[in-house]
Image 1 (tube, rainbow, N blue to C red):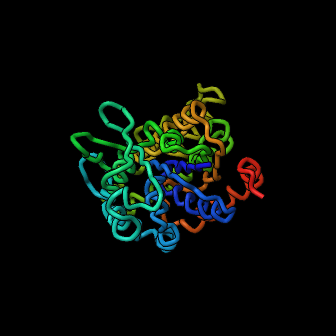
Image 2 (image 1 turned 45 degrees about the horizontal axis):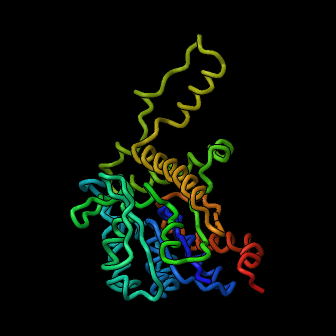
Image 3 (image 1 turned 120 degrees about the horizontal axis):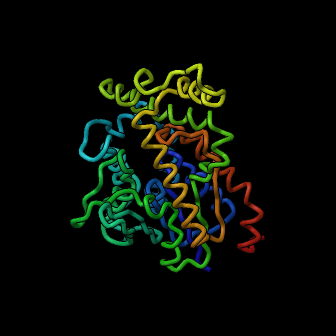
Length: 318
């Protein structure tokens, strides 16, 4: 039986993939083919080259300021960060030049910016595929490849189960990093979500002082004042808006992407469900907190531990 592993998108939360893969290996599960989207493509490229441990060691040593440096935040056409140093590290330390040189077959998902079609990479140079798959709209500039502008594969296929099946997988294990973003859960965890958005705002505002006016809310001009004629519910809502402040550009962008990704993921998984779905609990992690790799890896391992008996049963492991 050929086993496929579909690694989903989720920016910094993708370091959880490392813990998940390690935990699966501890169960003596041999993955035959790998498909990745966005950060899943980044981790998947290292894993398919048998460099997962090295990637985990490198990620676990990152500090917040190192992440800022690697991201290269600035004024770029089509995005707020270049991310070139991040991809340079992948190329220099963790992957060969071409798909054909990998130890396991790998598929990478990206999106054609103009047609909206999914673009799949399974051969040729690895780095253009990973860069395209990781081009989060608004954060990283679109990647030009063969006369097409490509962006994050999460726009159309956040958890590429179908690619595993295209590579001949009989049994697919999928990892969904956006499971915590559901309306029922968000209502109960509103404060945590708001705090997470602030973390993302703070990350970018630390990079360059010139961006602070972009990333901070404008309470004075856009927040309505309370009025004696308002009913209790309206006044309560107005007070809450005053307390939170207007959302920043980064807050609007990241929240919108989370909503999009969560809804597309649910739709795609319903139409093409995996045999095992792993959903780590990542609500506490901001999308730019790449320096929390140790915690994310640990949560990835715990998410497999919670499903260990189910995985053993379905794969008929002793």
